[in-house]
Length: 305
Image (cartoon, rainbow, N blue to C red; front, side, top):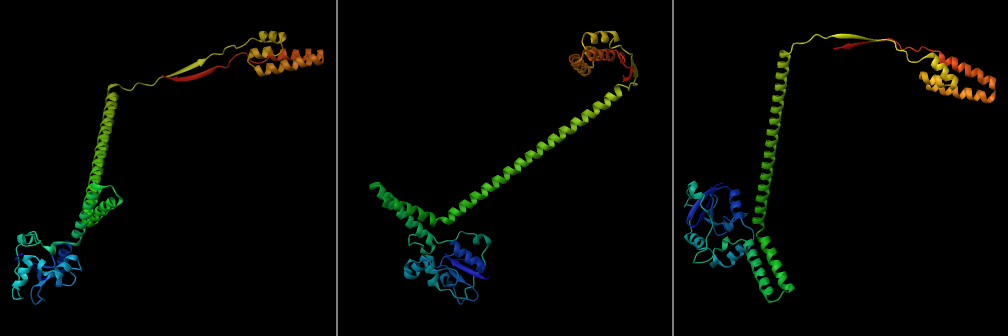
């Protein structure tokens, strides 16, 4: 800690070493800005501090062409402050002032030019050449220059593009979360409304049941016993007569259809084999038709009214 910066006749600080490296990487601190630390004998250009700047185009240009330095930096270097000029703490309002050398009529602030700015300028130049060649003739060279220029500009402005993409992704994620929250709130409200309606319906049904129980007193249950008398289903003589006319017909009259068919087959077969046997079986068939109870059974049933 304890790093101070001198720029445009202003002093800012103190800053930590980590903050100083962040400012250098983000372009807020240029190689020609003066920095001071209690371990340094005097104000020193930022390019002389190890770890702040790598070998960049702006550093090479500044070292090769000293005349291209910013006027503020040249004035600060010529003034040559020493360690006795201890920096004073500035207010938070002055710290938040926008830093950076601005172009003036005296010259260009070359230290503010980052390598990606030069790459972007090269991309613009290539794209301009491609457009110029395209206006003359649509050749592969013109198209190649235009594509190369566009790709170069995209690579130069990749940090800005990435920041915009991240902002868009965060915005979409926030919108998605808000939509999910709204949908969940809607579902909760619908569920609560349905539960309230169900509870109201149950309360109303209970009230109606209680009111009906008080309005109509319970009635005594009555029991009725119903007795069904015996009914004659068939007549013996009619059954015998039908069996004489046709074997098995009397059994069918009584409701014994299977027995009637069996007697008919047996008697007809006996007549075809031997007549006396057929007469005997026919007589047995008539006797069987006359047997049995022609009356129904008496039944008793209970009916609750």
